Image (cartoon, rainbow, N blue to C red; front, side, top):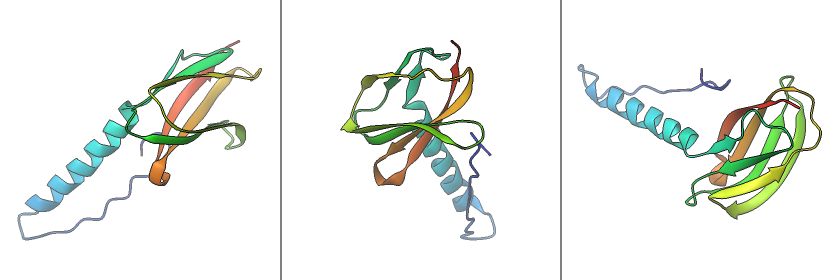
Length: 117
């Protein structure tokens, strides 16, 4: 489990040595990690604003802030490729939030954001 998500892996064995499958699993996991590291939110902890830095190669549809109970708090519509963009935060309660960055092809990246006023 990583960032509250379950990683489902289907194993296929080409022969008795299992060499092909472990290579495919490692490649898939490396791609997930690369996607996670392409996007950063700062400052973190945040107060009145945050900056999203990302990869200009991916189209971002939305950024959604979700509280620890799973309730959607804020939704920012982006619909652009960006390398950096500032967002204003409304007066949120202090705490930990999940920022879900929804990309093209329904992929998403989750980032934890701490709010301290």
